[in-house]
Amino acid sequence: MKKINILFVCRYNRFRSRVAKAYFDKINKNKNIKTKSAGLIEGSPIAGRGIITAKSFGLNIVGKAQGLSSKLLAWQDVIVIVADDVPQQVFNKNKKFIKKVIVWKIKDVYRKKGRNDKSVIVEIIKKVDELNKMLEKEKWQMN
Image: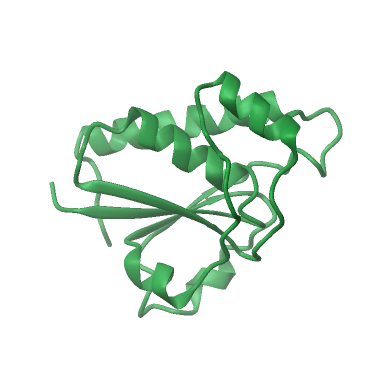
């Protein structure tokens, strides 16, 4: 398998994209697959509750939020939008950088009543597991 760079993106890089990256890195056994995460907009650090919940799943999401940059866009082979509030159209215009976009419409825990950190993490884990299985079976096609 050739090298694949996956960029997980959410709105602020505070929670959803970080959880996806941390979980993928935890389960990934293929050294040819690298990941990073970023926000459409660089956000402020996440509150302690989200960090504690992620840690209960064995995930470390501590650190400074990162916004999208031309350097990250040049690095990636695949963008996974881990959010319902990041429009795919943002990435459709630049064919120079964008090779493949996957969209997971995961709602922001802070904008949706009835959602909590744990339910969002469980939803992200399910999606990352599906992505990882697809990659393991080498059914991955770059087009």
